[in-house]
Image (tube, rainbow, N blue to C red; front, top):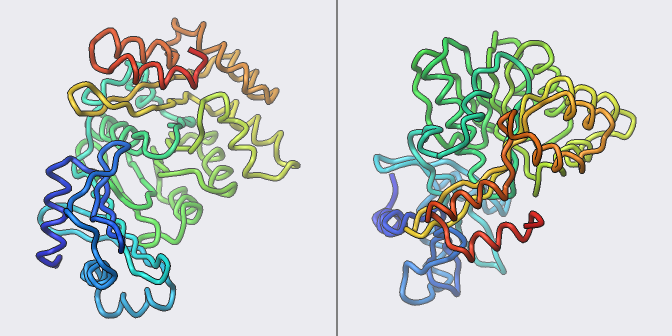
Length: 345
């Protein structure tokens, strides 16, 4: 059970619609709202207060483990929500970062994603990538796609996540959600096990190593729909990023596997809106003969031009997505320009 002090901090953070809380000696308690850190406490907290608040999140056994390991991760839940916690030392002081996890998954309609994203959910096999830098809503989109399949299709869906952020409730599908470190040792071991569990759809929280990538592509080629996220700054860097995990001797195999299995890629930027919320702007690549040929050749930098001319296949450029949000009065001119400056716009 969470202490009264921690509960008050979390309630204050949720009132600001924050995603994270930072407890650090020598600074006020702050929460992250969008890209900004906003104070919860009026004054900086001392070392003793920071330690006490951080240790309030741990059991005596966990405190003992933390003091040996110097870093400690855990999941917490109460009647108000679920939280991912990291306890850490900084310059000899104990502090914590608390991620406030969402509850039910959002729908694709709530995310206002282009129609092709929903179309991709109904593919029966292949590989779908959701790309973007950190905290751009990739997990939210992944969860919304799983929710779409769960609501409308009779499938067996297995997710491998670290942590499980959105809880899926069985609808027309059966959804097995497996947390790394709790239900399986790693993404790759969970993925190997999933292949023996009669899956129709496998959702992988993140591509972190070559073993995971290799198994995922094999599954996608053999009749499973695989959806995953990848940290990358733009779609044209997708191939380069995937190849960076492997050996040079495996490069050809990976390129051909990706070319044969890729159904589409969704690249996201999460933008602040004029009403204080957030909205996804996205660039979408759909697999075509031209896309497959470029991937086989390893010339990913030409994918941008394919997206620009691929409107009839449902493709969307970031420039088009941002322009639509600007035209509809959802984002400011400054936000639009700051995003487009990274996309040659």
